[in-house]
Image 1 (tube, rainbow, N blue to C red):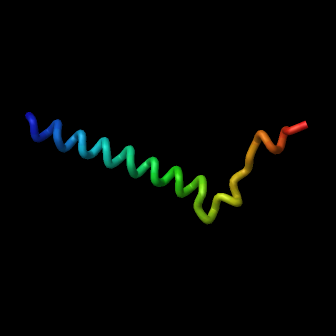
Image 2: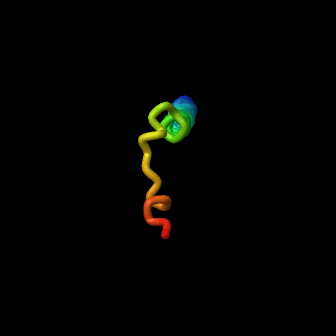
Length: 44
């Protein structure tokens, strides 16, 4: 039972790290110029 909890902890940790890296890549990567800012569009 200890092995299952160890591998599930490693799996969840890797998923969180990979989602964080992906979101930083999308936010600041080469395609970030194509993202729109809805607050800038409706600024009056």
